[in-house]
Picture 1 (cartoon, rainbow, N blue to C red):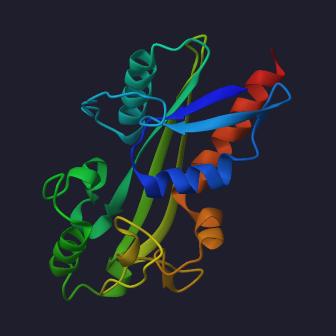
Picture 2 (picture 1 turned 90 degrees about the vertical axis):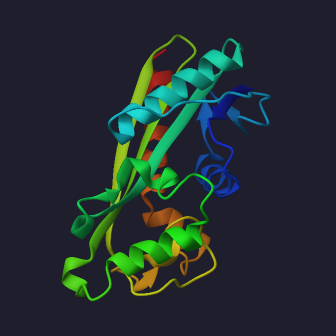
Length: 208
């Protein structure tokens, strides 16, 4: 069975990843999807890239090197929130905004305060997700996807994590934290990028 290691320790991400990638078959066989912790990888990865794609590549390569296991596929993502009114902050610093150990409730509160009095038409924002994949032969694949929306006026919803409670998807008129798991996976930036990467992987292995 082909192993796919995803370079994250975030339980929310892994739930989403498994939901979308669970049916992947490479060379006729299902794949086992593991987090870094489940794969026994303990790596302190410095995300010093200047874009979401660069950071995803840095993480994927570092996790692949740290695994020391031949034949595995390693995936990594870098994702974040861009708010146009705030010059696309927090952007690539989304996870580290106001400090890595600051709760997202505090981060969301800070962003809402900075947007106080700003009308809806100027609260446009997007979630961005880049995914990088290092294949056993060293080949590198990348994908980038976004979902457009706007920032609400208060936190709403319990189904998401991170900035989900303040990001409203116009098609649903709800925050991503108010969507069902199926609805979120259908439209999310990570869902789009994962499905595109899944197709890239299938096509790559079909050619071998």
